[in-house]
Structures are given as C-alpha cells and as structure tokens.
Image (cartoon, rainbow, N blue to C red):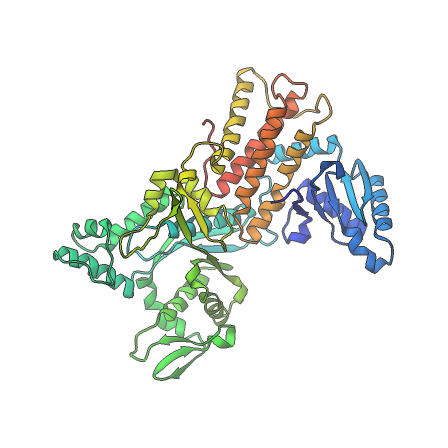
Length: 522
C-alpha cells in the first residue's frame, strides 16, 4: 500500500461501503456528475484527500481542468463537505477536512465497533471454499499450509463481507498415489524397503507399526494439524463416496464416444480440449469424479464454488468452469484460485524438499519452530501469485524486525494504555479534543478510515495479503503518534484514548482476518 491509497466510492469498487470517506466520494460524485475516486496525497500539506476527476471531465466538457476543479471546490465548500478545497497542478482538486469531521469519523468507528467495515457485499451469496484437500499420503507440508492459510483467510474475508461461507476438505482417497502409499506401509510391515516410487519417512514407519488401515490415523493427524493451525472445516468429503454418483453426473453432460472412450465436450464450453470421462477399459477417469463432485456441490445450494489449488493446477481452471456451465450454472460461479510455492530459508539457505523421500518440512514442525501466528502471517503476507521465501530465522524472532510481532506489539501496547486508564478510573469516552489535532493524530484517523474499502476490495479481489500490509501501516502510524504525544494526562486525553481504542479494535480485526491472535500483553 502506498501513501496515495485509492479510496473509492461504493459503486466504484462494486460493494456496499458506507464509511465516511466513501460517503464523501459519493457526495462529490453527485456534484461532478462522474465517479470520484479519492486518494491520500503523500504530503498532507496538499490536503487530506485529492481527486483527478476534473482532468477526466475536461475532454467531455471542453473546459480547462483547473476551471472545473475550481467549480467543484466552490460547490463542495458551499455544501460544507470540506473545510477547505482548492485546485492544484494541471487540474487536481485538493480537499482539507476539519478536525470536527475527523472526530465525528472516529466516533463512527467506535460506534460501529468490531463491525466497522463489515457487511460490504452488495449481493450476499452462499459460497463454498474448498481448500487444502491434500491426499492423505502423509502429514500436511509447509507448501500445503499456504493453501490452508490463503484459503481460510479468503473464507474469513468473505464472511466478514456478509457472505454465508462453508469450508470443505476433499480427501482423494483413491488413485495411484494412494496405491503407492499403501504399498509403502505394507512393505515396511513386511520388513522391506518401500517401492522406488513409494513414500518414505518416519511417519510411514509409525503407520506401519499400527494395525489395520493406515488412512484413518493419517486423516486424524491431518485434521488435528488443521485445528492447531486455526482452520476449522465444516464438511469433509471422501472421493470414494463421490464415485458412486459418477453415472448420474455423466448423464447430465454433453458427451460422445471416441476410441472406445466416453468424452465430455468441454471444448464447447471454454476448455482448451475435450476431457475423458470413461476410459477405453471402462473405468472412470479423474474428470468423471470432478463432474460428480461439482454436481454434488451445486446440489447443496451454493451460489459460488471456490477452489484453492496449487501452481501445478493451472489447467484445471478451464475444465472446471466448463463443467459448471455444462451442469447449467454460470462458469463465473466457479472460481479457481491458484497459489505459488513456498520455499523455506534457514541460515540463509533454501531447503530442498521431497515428500516421497521423506525430506520434507511438515506444517507441525514449522508451527513448533515459529508458532501459529508467525506461520499464518507469513503464508498470507505475499500475493498468492508470488512465490514465498519464508525466512525461518526472522519468523521466530520476537523483535520489531518481525512484522507480525511488530503489529501484535501495537495491539499489546494499546491494551497496556487502556488498562492503566481503567486503573485510574478514566473511562474511554470520545469528546471534542482540547486543542487542535496534531498531524500524527489526523494521520492515524485517516489510516483507520481506509479499512472498509480495503477490506471490501480484499474480499472482492481475493487478496488477503492486503490485510497484513495495511496492518503494518496502522502500526507505523500508531507508533509514530505514540512516540510524539502523551495519551494519559494530556489536554487531548479523551480523544487520544478513543483513538487508541479504535486503533486496537482495527488491529485486532486485521489479525483475526488472517487467523492471527491479538495479544493483550507481550
């Protein structure tokens, strides 16, 4: 996020945002007769907010942009929307807000409380997010953990926006990989080495020492790890249970026979080629199971299906959306979110990992080393389309060099201030400040006001990494304010305590949206 964060009116970001800044943008839009997008200038001397709408209007109005900006400024002042407004540069409009407006905006944040920025979905949907869904051939790995952290953060953002969200895990308990898994366990039980293409590692030996089917204890371990990682699934589905529904699903598709196999005509629905449903030997292909599974999902009444898949699944986007369309649903009602790989870096060197060799970083080991909070933070701190290099040495530090610690420390510091105020019998009750607001106070209020639009866009665009980035900016602004101004026993004590409380609430909300705890003490 830059100093000139884009702050859009509700119609511009496609969501029902009704915060003070969006209302200001909407009022200016009414004046201009064109969408107004507000930005925060890098230099506060140039205004609290600015817009280039006059530059966009100039070609259609046939007037100089500065003249249009001057007219907009005059009307904004006449309507008392701003304290001051003036044209700048080739035709920008700079807007200055009064202390009274900022105090009222802070009061609105506190009045709404934990719901500030929530419920922005213009058309709430029933959405299923299917994530992780790793084969039960071993414990969850760090690579799979990114799927979990990213998918769960998406689900949290969607819920916060007002959607009805279900989390589902799909166990592929059939197929070649499972056969190799079983063969590896059975080989160890016979006192032999696993097959060359099998699985190795201590966990295989542990499973071999147990009687019976090795899958149930593997499933239990996976589910325990996910709960530890603060991810709770609403439903669990086994591929073996879905396979019985394949004939019914195929009957609904546009199919044809070729080379003794049955094909789905997915190329007619945006896929790059047709897909095999039933192989020439009469056995169903993987795509047949996909068809049955998607049919089952829609039958449960979901408006939107979201798949979270790894980088090696790019080819699935077209085929799954084609299936949705062939089953009578909009292809856009099925989303496939692709995330890139995770590389662990320790002592400055990247670790090479292979699940089959047993040389792999398991999620539980990572949690033991850096903790759940750091793991959740780092696994969503970068855009999903970028590879992550997770610096284990930095992630386990409890210093302000570690961004998750830095943000949590802001929350804990505020908690300490509020505890001291309570001990002294001082209630947090927003009142008019005793003197003009300092730049650091104004900057912090404006930063908090960015949250509704940012959270809405993070939900709409499926970009949870925007949340930790924003949280760092909030912590930056708070620490700058804290180091420059005394809170208790100051002329602006009531206002500053209220500002601290609002900041604490938003920091806690940001951390919760990515599955990180907000500690009261550190």
